Image (cartoon, rainbow, N blue to C red; front, side, top):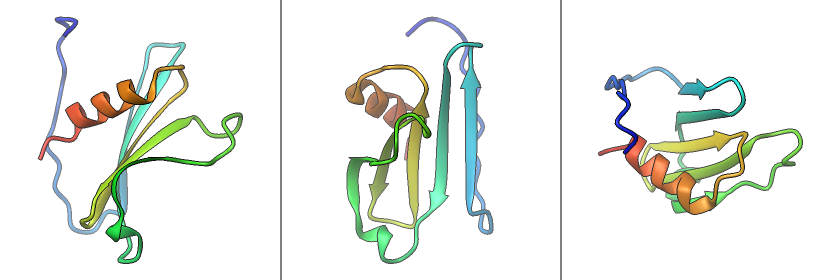
Length: 94
């Protein structure tokens, strides 16, 4: 929407446990992670928040589609939950 270029690279793997892409402008940091989900956790579906201490861990939102992988977005800025979901949706296109 800003008109600035966005660089993407599709990545498929069979052995990695997770991958994390981190973006920063010097003040705020935004990180997107794709991770392998174990069989028990893999049954979760939808978006959910963490209950980690905000002063230790950045603000997270998680998404799982009931499959093998989960995704998360963390940020150091105070964006809304809805904004985090929209960013994660745009980053993870199936």
